[in-house]
Each structure stands twice: as structure tokens, then as C-alpha cells.
Length: 286
Image (cartoon, rainbow, N blue to C red; front, side, top):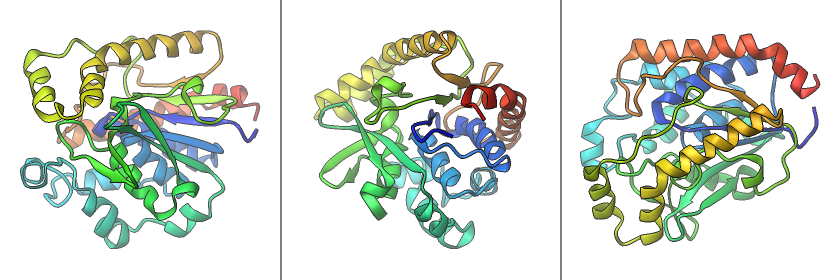
């Protein structure tokens, strides 16, 4: 496989279970792309992919779904974060559902986590080898959803969910030259975000008024997302990227707590990844 081949992973919080299913199939078939870029939940999925741990993302999200240490309104009220990343990247990774740190750091795959710079509203790309152990802080920042998560300091940067700045990068957005590119999205083709309601806009103003560039990025999200999906559709039609995405409308919400729906979305990701493997192998020249 050419070393500039790149895998791009969209976020979507609990909709990331679709991506988990896709990546588990990749791992089971020994398909490891050299460059991986993850946004928000995509970064969390990317971590397990580079560590070569199929099934771990599914277990983290289903086995601990009702565990108040991991997620929920109580933690949101206490720490202003719906997801408890201290638990996810701490006790869970270290003992409850061990993460293979040795394989992760030894892997030659390059992994970037995309976060939003709260001062500029622009995307920041953090690479695991360049950042070292602080990379997991960048992953936390990448997955800290606006209004449902706190800002995170990565070095001197103050960051929030990467989806605010770039919902899913295309090759032209990347800080390195990408060759053949595979995108895993968490919404069906044709999905477009509706305009934000006035109450949501007011919440953004109240929460991020001290960060005007971030506020502008939050308010512009629907239009920016829709324009990026149009670009992706054009690139796909031209054969310049290979896209894997749900074939049917996704009803799983960002903070979904219905275990059956989450498992079904994971299974859909698996099934659709298996179905597209021949075409993907041909695209990659394998």
C-alpha cells in the first residue's frame, strides 16, 4: 500500500458506533491504512484502530453505557462534560478495558486528532508521534462537544470539538499530502444539517461570547457542514475518494442511550464494510 494512503474518520459522538463496525472489519482483514485522521469520535475510533484492538470501541460504549462514571447528565452537571474522559482515558483504559499502549506507540501508522482552536475557530491537527503522551489530551479536546463539554488545553492551545472547525477534512484540508483517500462518514448520503434554532444560537452566544471566532464557527456549522458534504459528493463522483457511510438514515443521537439502536448501527457498519471490501481493495490497488 502506498504510504500516502489516508483514512479520514468523521465524528458524531455515539453515531461513531457505525465507524467502530467498519474499522473492526478492517482490522479483522488486516487492512491498516498508513495515515489516519479522526475528528471527535473519529479520533477515539482511530486510537483503537491504531492499537489494533477490534471490538474495544463497541465494548467501551455498550458495556459502560449505563455507568455514570462514563457518561450522563449527572457528569454533565458536575463537570460540564457529558462524557467523562478522565474515566474513559484513565481507569477504563488502564484496567477495566485495557488499552494496548505498547502496540499503539510502536505502530508505524500516523494518527492525527483534529480539534478546534477556540481563539481562531480554525482546525488544529495533532499527530501522535509529534505530541507524544500529550496526544491523548488532544484526543480529549477533539471529542469535547460544544455545549456538552469543556474546553481543553493542549499545550498553549485552548481547544474544543474538532467538528466545530472541520466536520470531516477532505484531502485539500490536510497538513500533509494525501494520496488515495478513504472517508468513513456517520450520516447517510444526502443528509444535510437544518438551520440552528434560536434557543441553540442563544446558548452558543451565552457560552462562547468571550471567544468570538469560536462563536462564529459554532453558528456557521450547518452551512459549513452542508458545503463540505457537497464537496465530498463531488470528489466521490469523480473517483478521487472512496466513501463508506450508512446506506439508510441514522436515527442514533449524539448522546444515544438505547443499547439496541447502538448495536444495530455497529452491525450496520460491519455489514456495509464487508460488502464494500472488494471495491475498496480495487480502489487501493490491493
